Image (cartoon, rainbow, N blue to C red; front, top):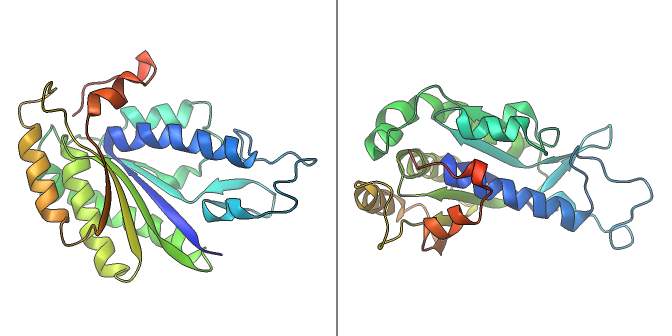
Length: 223
């Protein structure tokens, strides 16, 4: 089996991840509590879901994913949301102080305090894989966490898993409308740092488009 580990970083990465895992569950017939109905056979015994989910001895399907943010507000929405039973609590990592829209705080100070914990949780997921193919990284580069901590994590992943593929789904800020005056600086700094560590990247050009498709309760200004 060729497994993929998903890493969701910062507000945008987590909210995009919420939508992704809901779709993955629908695609594979997995319920919000991680169970697959006993009478449900996916493609006549197809185990394709193992790429994204691991199966426990009790028959629960747990995402091969880590969610990380420097403050708890957005991750708490996952912890209390419809799919709260889907994720293992250790996979939801949050700090106490956000990056304040500052790349340097996410990369060099606040983010540096949490990156080892993130890597430890990723290592546990990797150890549970029989043939890890690579990582899917979801983040935005306009805010401080997605840009700063995101590039720091990629740097460390390149050291620990140098030969593994890393595919990034990166939300870039809108050039027309900006929620913060420093978004261009964060984007440039993050993109420069990531050039050596992010060989393949899918660009989402307008964060506002993504944000406006979210439920009103999830539309928070980027930090």
